[in-house]
Length: 229
Image 1: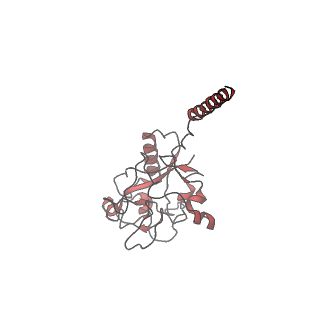
Image 2: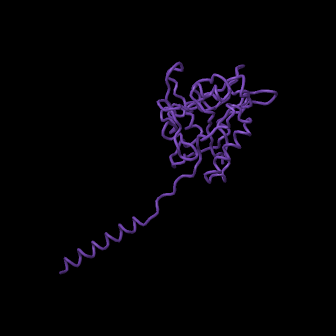
Image 3: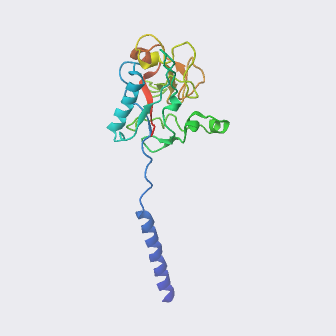
C-alpha cells in the first residue's frame, strides 16, 4: 500500500512539473530588424536619393507594425558635388538584426561583412531562405520566374562606397536613365557572365538605371532595409 501511495505521489508530481513546463510561455521572437523591400519605387534605381529610400523602408516597416524603429536603406553613395561619400555599413546601426520570421541575419556590422578571417569563414546568415520581405515572403531567385534577386546596394563587398570615376549608384539613386548601379544577390546564387561571385551586396553592375534595365538583369528595384536603432 505504501509503495502504491508513493508511486501515485511521484506520478502526480511528475505530471504537475510537466504541466508547469508546458504552461511556460515561449521565448519572445526577436523584433523585425531587417528586410528586403517587397516593392521598389517603380522608377528603377531612382529612389529619390538616400532620403527617398529611407522613407520607403520606414513606410514598409510601418505597414507591418514595425514603424516604431528607425529604418535605413543599405545603400552607399559616391562623393559628388562637394558632398562626401556615404558608406552603407555606417548607416544601419550595430545589430543584431532579425528577419520577419525572427531569424538573426547578423549579430553585428563586422559579422554581416565578414571583417575578420574568422567572421568571414563563419559568414552571415543572409541567404535565399532568410532574405525575406517585411511581410516574411521570400524573394524570387535563380530558377524562379521572374528572377528578382538583384538587390540595389551601390557598394563594395565590405559595405563601403566606390571611389573610382565610374557611376556605381545611378547618380546616387536619382537617375532612371544613364548610369549603372551595383547590386548584390539576395539568394547568394549566381550563373552566367559574372562567374562564381555570390555576394549578397556586391555581385555585378546593372545594365542601366531604368526599371527595364534592372529587370533585364534579374532585378526589380528592391533594396535592403535595416533597423538602425
